[in-house]
Image: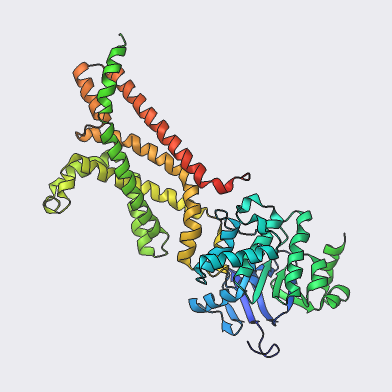
Length: 250
Length: 231
């Protein structure tokens, strides 16, 4: 691992992404250093999700460069595999494998990708289930859990792969209000441990208390990035101001 | 016209003697057809245009022609070719049963491959993305995510096809095979009582279908156990 200041963990240089003729990302420049917590917000369709999905190649960027811990994302399968070993992801809809028990959800990739023996994989799975405070659910199926519990399992599943970075794609947007906090608590806990996190979310309370940097996107561009304090108290861009007015008006 | 119940009682056991052949036609062509369907499915989703195209043309032809015509082509048509008569397949193709199994297999394979493809396409894309994000390869995702989920999604349509295959086996009687329908036709020829005989035959098929339906119900419940909330 290189020195924090010299090599960013995530480096995006002039990244453009098109869906047909629609440009989803415009000239994105972004650097994220080890241990940083980044929150990305912005109106729907602004390219937030597309941006983080480019980081683990769920979307392929059209031009520009993306380096993850010094590995450039290209068409090379080895590079994509190497990046995905370093980057975990948590989705809006949890995406737990419905036909596997909770424990199996956490073990499958360890066994297949990391070639971890079954017993050890199970042990690691249980360790992370304890960490998200639901070890007793290990042998149930995802559908038997509440949304909040499922999302905590999804976080544990990402952690089992021992990633350098975790991407969160609106992790609380599909949850009932009373379940949002249990998921945010786990995320705050991760942040305290120094996990590098890039988080697309509308939870402004979380952004204010946890983020090192808040990024505002609109129409595929990074419009503004600042510390949470500067971002919420003294936004400079008009589009940022309009957005903040809308979401903080209640 | 009188309805002869005695004749029903007499002809039922005779027809059941053909149950073995009906069952053989169903199971052998059902099994081989499923293997063929999986092969066609893999060709269709391989991403290789020429494989996809070959499979599509095959499916188009076999879904687009009546199975009875396919049986006739294979039974009456293929032996015309000397190459076939001299090939290793001749000992299968010179038996009507072999021809019927071949025709049923080729036909059901075309239908079932489309059923399976429907199942594969309805697997939630988000689950495959989760697999990718965890570093799973395309093959691993197909085996551990797509296959089990697509199996369950395809099962209702698949059971429909098996039931329809059961009834297609009756067409084998047109090429001299003495399955249940073949025996029934013989009895009718002897007794001139089509009404009684064919009604009893229909009853046998209905009971058979009922059993198949129950069997698939059990399999479906087993594969769906993870979709039930209560323990």
